[in-house]
Length: 303
Image (cartoon, rainbow, N blue to C red):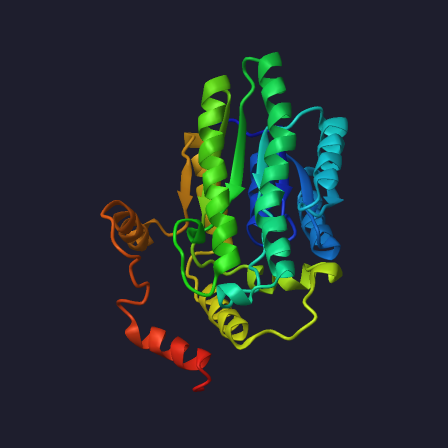
């Protein structure tokens, strides 16, 4: 896709982070946008920014984990603009972290509901609309971008539910790529795998539904994981704005894998070598043993 002017883009998670930056790029490109987020005040801020800049947009509060709300979003999109060209399945949460067996059923339901089922619902509902548009118009071009993570390529400790959800998104999108290739040359897809980028994902629990909140305090391992996650996200040197630029470049070139830190793929290469050798999983802290020792000491109550 080379010409974006007048194209319709649906963006979930538009209230902050990558979603808001996708919308800001959309302003410059002349996109018409459908902005969706579960957090209404943040969504309104993005909407205000977009419309104040003169872009055409509508907004809708959406919990992506609920299929009926994604279906309602699709109806709103079609009723307003008639079709959709770009779909950003971007909404995501960081999860509760901690030792895998200490994640509650509610933790798993929340993380998989947003990170995985949100993408599943988006693909299931919007892809047929895009393929129908392609059949009607030989000049139509569509593109789906699913936000995964480098956690979809790796398996760092204390990130179990998040890792699982993002690996699934990578697998889903790779399969979507192959499926689309069988039926259309007009609709493409990409998977975004960012590393540590300063966004609000580490504070996503602010939007956790009451029914899925735990009734007990965080375990020690979950506290350690939260502290590590917040520190890592804040340390990121690549901005969400830069990542949004990478994404639109990938759409233009029809590139599939989108990395925020392509120079940091060494751990991914090591993991694939583990799989194909085969050998036991590599130690993620092999070059920083003091970090692993500190974490282990904290988990055992030493600090």
